[in-house]
Image 1: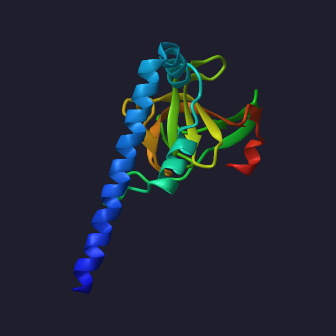
Image 2: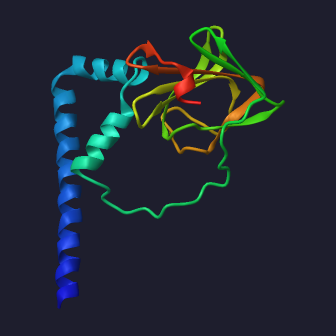
Length: 180
């Protein structure tokens, strides 16, 4: 009898969270439909500016939690950063690495940029869960896509001889020594 009561409470909790999520989504759609200029603003925020995905995810999990529990998987690639030499470079640091070095992700987060950055070549920016943006420069990746959630230690891509890292929070560049 007690097990049935616990099961009912869990089902009720899941249904409440699902209903609340649907209501929030529908309210958002009604607002966007009623105000066409808001649609352009949202598009600009999503595709041209940096939207704080980690803050949204943290807020969502805090108030709604995970509606459906997903079994955790173990990563195949789980490495730490290794390099041969380190030197200050522009706003960050340049690491000398082996040829075709497989670059691990320093901290979990969301990929918010993939493309060319002046002085850093092909760059991937990850907004970490702690709010710090990490620029990984001179990197080639075929598997990572924009807005992917990436885990610490997973493979980000490959660097050939040099890897550039820049740490930034709220527009200010941070000292790399605290993060490497």
